[in-house]
Image (cartoon, rainbow, N blue to C red; front, side, top):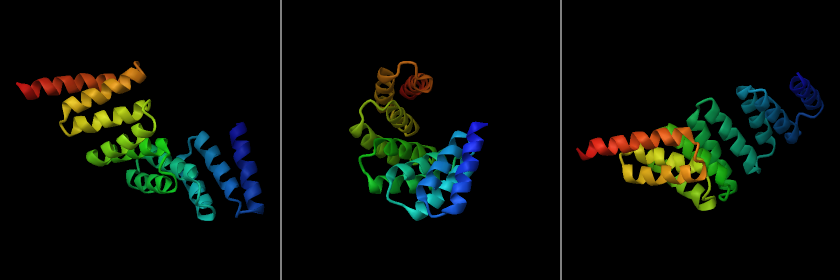
Length: 175
């Protein structure tokens, strides 16, 4: 309930000053907290029209696009975040997710490599890389990547499951 009150307060402040980009970003975050992703996207877009130089806001918008499975827009906005800050490892990781979901496995691997170069403990990047390699039939590479993910977070269920599937696929391929 308090979150809705906060959203209403921010909206009232925006009525007085609709050109305040920080209020738009604050509203976007509130909507995100309320899991109103489309409203959060609209608020981020309005804020970014006013002030477009913050890579974190572009990243957050890209993340929201992934949440609603709009991978093409996620790729566009995450690329913008990386144009502004090529060292933003989380944006590389999210970009790898969008590319993976879009079936662009080779590009996803390249994004994973950038994320891992910036943060070698990024279990999501390692998992995405393993998943991309798996989808390309490069099972030895997938196994290495997934083992790296599990070294970081041993309880990562998706990586465990995918690793089992990878070993099974590798065994079937060699028969």
